[in-house]
Length: 115
Length: 115
Image (cartoon, rainbow over all chains, first blue to last red; front, side, top):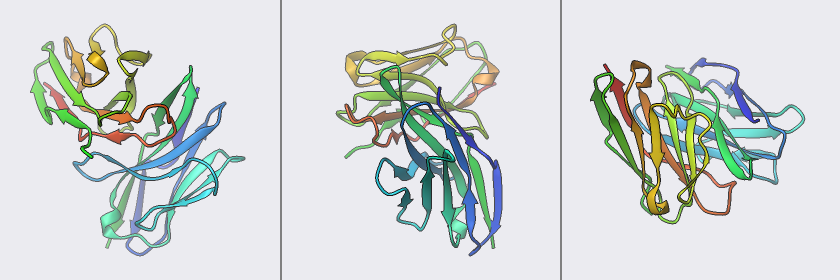
């Protein structure tokens, strides 16, 4: 069975500092990996995804994540955060299970950016 | 392209009452998911449909929760009778048919408060 572990429930950081949100997964089959963001009182939005090819994927707002198969990780990074990045971030794994794809989420990491 | 529509946005009921949520996925999307997101936690998959058939309902509390997807389009999720611990945001998501590694699109969710 697949599972997702987000190692930090909360990450406080100052504006313009770098940040890393950690995500590890377990699955016995090939996986596809996603980061979703949830701003206060809003729905889930896709931030970035790894399907195949280059293990480093980027979003349009400066986030990047690297798929590491040997460490079963998909950590999210940003070199310089803004106040507007304050949100809840969810790592998710999509893998075949019983002949169908199944999308499973981690518990989330709350990123709080302070001035 | 219209997004995933959910209604109502908010609902307050007393324990032991019944409630129903409605979801209209993106046109043409064969896979539909219902998730439960309790405050401070990640989304938990309740049930997954492929067209109008259930492919995974292993985490659905079947003694009180039910869901259907008539004609493979709209879906309803019902709780009867509700308990205090059912207070959560109920999220509906859909993905396109046959390409199981694409992103899931989420609705705004229905925030249920059971008092």
